[in-house]
Length: 85
Image (cartoon, rainbow, N blue to C red):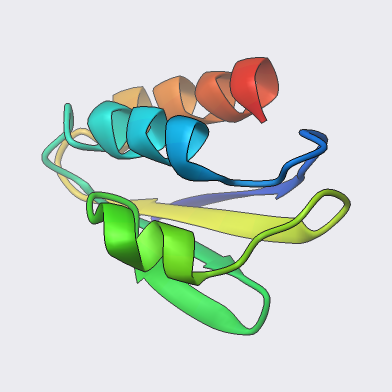
């Protein structure tokens, strides 16, 4: 399992547009991708679950990746967060 922490910089937090892009990115991999934040946990491949986390600017989240292609998924998700959130 691989994991990284990230502090949300986007002023709107994880709202509809970036959440949709996040789900699309996570769905490209076989590995399970889980987002933990705001005292909750969500499968990053499910839009409603990601949005229900209520992640706002300044909150720290963790992203856990586990599975066959976890190294590639880890790199892609880390890059996604750095570029979009």
